[in-house]
Length: 388
Image (cartoon, rainbow, N blue to C red; front, side, top):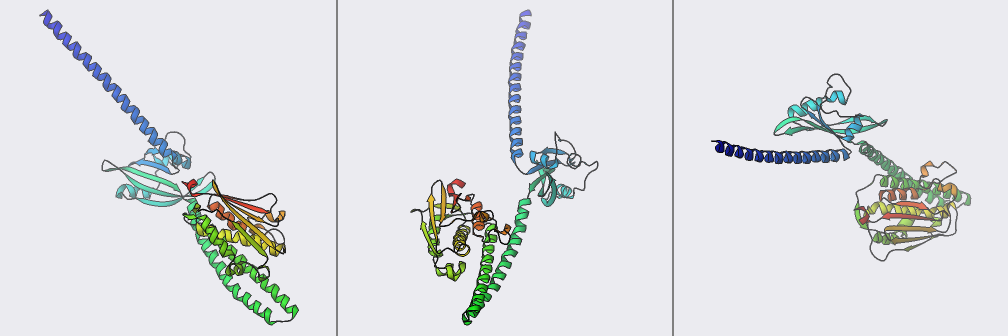
């Protein structure tokens, strides 16, 4: 009997040992799963905190389940707000807010959006707020709200409208001026008296300069609007541009008759194709206006007998274009050379070529600067592979 009890006790002890070992293994597995779950939670939290989009998750009672960093910054929240009512933690209210979008999303499982104005860092910002039903295991467990700052987009949309109006007005003014200039020119030819001829010539020159200013302004607004990126062969564009700027149409469009033989352009281009990520049309327009500004300023304002412009393009880690000219811009001109609209009458600069070119360079993530002696200008633009 005694031996039987001892054998039974031995078996119980052995089973107990196995149970304890199994319990220890189970405990370690639970701890491992808990660590994995905690790590996954941290990864998810850090991922959502990295977004510049505010994320808010609410249950069916409008209690906060989750908020990310961007939302905390938007509503100036500190500390843990999990479990609190949204109107309490976010809006600092004692009673529920209207929350119409939230109720509709809960009751009808609809995705809704609205634009709301928030005060962030002392400035008004427009946010696109999207509300989604939060479906968990086939049932609506609450709602998810995202807050996206669309202030810059709204400004861009408004600018698009205004720039469209500006381009239209510039086009109308330019079309109105052109026939007047042609009529004045014809009158100048018909009036053989020297005194009248001088007056009409001066009048025609003024009208031409006004027309050219509108043309430059139209180009500036066009480039300011921005356009989609594309890959283009910049060396081929410059090669074609070399022929275009010496054409009769280009010369008539940009220069007064008495300076059309007063300039010389030399271009040195890379022998092979160079691909660039940007916009070919924007690039072409800007370089044309840059060339026209350098020539017209030297011939008209400085009254040089000849303006020599040497353009050298180099393909290295970046694409470099050097404009060298045989004169120096006065110091008072350099102050306004990239912002001609800031110049006042009798001082500054009234040509838009450098401003147009700067917009193009900014668009291509490059740089533009005059050399210290003010007799050359250098443009640097990253090549396509630097954008990827």
